Image 1 (spheres, rainbow over the protein chains, first blue to last red):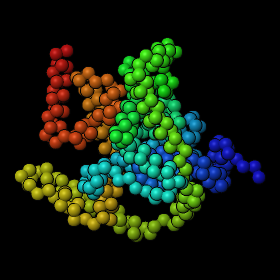
Image 2 (image 1 turned 60 degrees about the horizontal axis):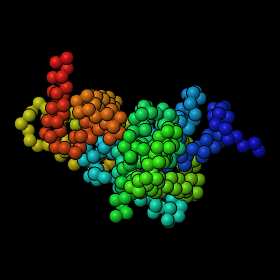
Image 3 (image 1 turned 45 degrees about the vertical axis):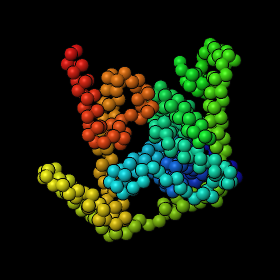
Image 4 (image 1 turned 180 degrees about the horizontal axis):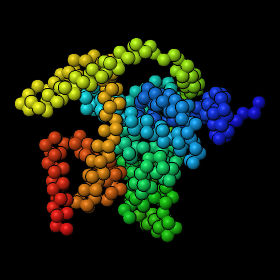
Length: 184
Length: 203
């Protein structure tokens, strides 16, 4: 069987009614969506919700995708917006005193991440990431983990390349300082 | 260019050829710079290494089936949904009434909104929040963007803070507000506004 992997072909196939092609697209991008959301939100449940939400948007809106940008840029844009909305909701919850925790509790199904050592290192870094201001965290995650260029980050976030670079610079410096502090 | 900036640009390969050569020369002559570079490289390494972390395959395999189940699941009963909306609308009306009452009756000390929200159970709170989210999202987006833009511009012109730095540090009205008491935040914000206003009048 000829397995289609090219995004364009998969989208066309899905839009022609082949649901299996959507499943292939979903499997191709699900992990990237999860990690971006997880690193932004510091929580497995919320990241899992974002994955489901983004898949739903993809399913309903792929017919409007016009290939003017790469599919992954489009998906990251949806994921980033949804993650920021989730953070706004948390803020709103705090304003209404629905959640008394000032800081985000790091939780999640621990065995979601393979390997105990990797899990521990990830959790340590996740705590540091949560200490960054949202805009810095977003650029830091996109640059270091999603491997996006400043150009792509700028397209996704709607900020200038200069602003993205400045955010990255301050995030990197802060992470270094936090790591130093952690070691002491 | 400060050392931190040079180091990060060096690691990210963003220095020009000349800047790179100058930086490497400085590295040879400065143990302090070398030590600082090592710290950044360690942080970078630790960060990048975590890209190798893998998700449990069983979990990954469950994502698409769960999505398909949700997609194929019949919509929840319209009666239940309509009742939910009705309840939500009712709550929004009550909140609006309480807030309006608070505005018009200034001497009332009791915090009705807080009392009201505290009297709700967890499900009612979530429902209220979802309804409020729907109604307030546009308003929040507009108001937050406006104040952020206005304040960033003021910081740039009045306090000589670089726009990109102000943005990078996520300096906006709400953030300032979080760290200060209401009166302190208002005082500072008004001072900035007044200062800018006077300068504009002089021009």
